[in-house]
Image (cartoon, rainbow, N blue to C red; front, side):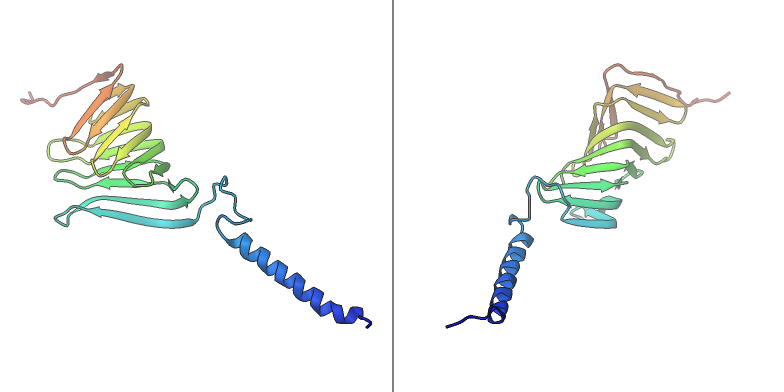
Length: 192
């Protein structure tokens, strides 16, 4: 029996297509041939978003808005570009902003970096408060923030600087760490 090459061509072509299909199916699976767990590639990207957290009574606790969010499955990390975090409470809202943020996988910790600014809006009898630093770790649910980077606090004409800081937004306390310097101007109780 004689086999012609013309008769083998369809068989070779089908075998090649089956092998290619098998390879493509394996390469497209996570953890398959084409996926390297050492790569740090995002699995989803969200542009121009806002997340809100509410208290048990239905009032708004805090809000996070940003230009872009990237989630990475290899370490379950989330990075955010140009985040703006706002805490709403009984007094004036407190706003935190930065150029970058890294959110922990459980969402309980936000690490802000690059030009971090905290602004507590002016309220009756209190001028606006501005805090600037290079980086800050925020615990949104507890309304606590910490930094070990140099920090500057400006409120009205008063200026304070320190080597680090802890903030408790609920108690309205700002505790400077390390060497601190500053000038505090008080309001005249009885102006001349």
